[in-house]
Image (cartoon, rainbow, N blue to C red):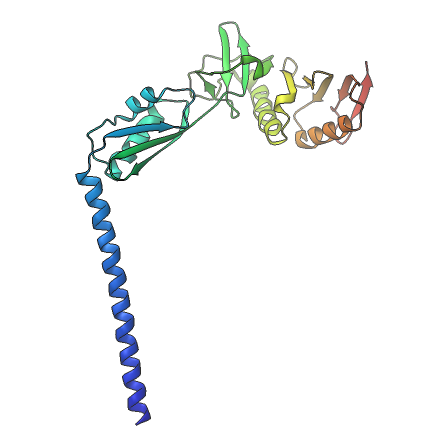
Length: 253
């Protein structure tokens, strides 16, 4: 008798579980059907752009190929995102979302300039990863000044091109830009002079000339540099020689 009751209980429990799964599947199918219907039958009447500084909203919308009246179907949004990134080199990512029922939002992330290199043919704006950037909208004085590197012709969106002779300088610059950003020091550095790749020097806090030496142990050198400056007075000026790893020397003047 007990076994029969236990068997009926198991059957009833299994039936309830199956019904629960079936309801869940029906709910998901209904939700998918609604979403598909919205994408197909609702035409986009408004397109907004967010996150842009370098490019205008019109430039980004035109690059996407989207316009009012199109469907908000996901494949179209994916293609539009690729178009933006391929046609506008200054855009590193583009996400296109649908706001039900008929509004589309294009959210872009642009590659911004952090440094400027003066060349014989003009200025070259550089991102943190040393890519050429155009359309900087701000005070050039806020950018880190780079000297002593002679780039080859570089298109916007490309990593700065240099000759084989200058490749070591480019490697040094890339590492310095990343480290100065990570350490929160980029705004305090007024100049990076790579005229001698074995004796990189720059102005720091507009009070010190810093000599970094070769491209070695840079993170440790910068950390030691900050600790030395923290122990100096607000009016101290001079030269900080960080060229020897694990050592730092301050020369007033």
